[in-house]
Amino acid sequence: MLQFHVDMKLLFDARYIRTNHHDGISRFSAELAASLFRITPVVFLIHDVNQLTKLPDNCDYLIIHKPTSIKEPLTSLILNRYKPDVVFSPMQTMGSFGRRFKLILTLHDMIYYKFRTPPKYFNPIIRFGWWLYHLTYIPQRITLNSADMVATVSETSKQSILGAKLTKRQVIVIPNAPQDLTDQLTVPLSNKSEPINIVYMGSFLEYKNVETLIKATKYLKNHTLHLLSGITPNRMAELDSLRPKGAKVVFHNGVTDQEYANILADRSVLVMASRDEGYGLPVAEALAMGVPTVVSDIPIFHEVAGDGALYFNPDSAQDLANKIKSLSDDKLRQNLIKQGSKHISQYDWDKSARKLLSAIKSSLLQ
Image (cartoon, rainbow, N blue to C red; front, side):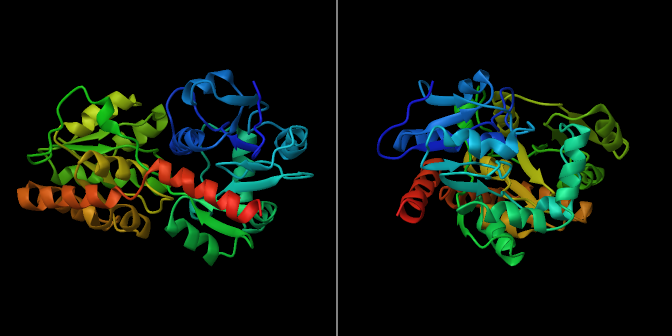
């Protein structure tokens, strides 16, 4: 179903939305799409009708190829026939050749220029192309300069993009924001006593530095480390081989939003040992829920958490363990929760949608 409205023909590329469990790009797409739908007419670009279950009811949509299709370089030629004024993509794979509309591409971070291991769910050919693409800035510069505007999800990422001179286009920040996990709870939130559960939500790629989390359990015999995300058997075996003797580590291999919320609510501390991030959505979700948070001492986490988290050296499992142990101090823990809730309140999907719409109207449609 496709229906454009007369004031502005806006297409939102929702093809990155997963139909089972969200990853970071998928959740960013779905949440921003829902908020944008509430404030302006928009048509969603999908490749699978099942993606409509993650989009607003009764929305307008257009079905085309997958982002990984060989047709992707020709996407703009396909979209020209629908005469959009603006197309927003939450990624940067969309081909811009021959386009007759304004285009906003999104670069979430520059992580893969430092850590070039591609996502394992890509086929081998795409994985090889991904690796080649990130060997130099030149392809990214060509891609981003082919758009009219570039979006990213944090001020930290914006400064990285500008520092690398990746684009001559205007770079705007459309911040990520936490979902309200309290809606998913079926158990009471228990954050009034010392945490005994250490919770990690995220992938197991190199830059996530999950190894440090596992090594820290050597000093945390009274705690249980919960690794929530889906994981391949080989990677699980690799990480499990690092488990200290007697340490309690649980591989959940994927959880629902409800299970995620309930685990966080159960005397937990959210931890991330990343060496780099574009935003760090699990950190934001924990802060918004009122769960104490301990994260690696990198710029993006200071942006997202402010004074609402404890920071540790990502190369030191002992430092991580000490920070977690310090949460036994009730006064420290409750102050951390208070500061975290206050800081994260500035991030809101409706604010992000309004910022995107304002940028479109003020900079692209003049």
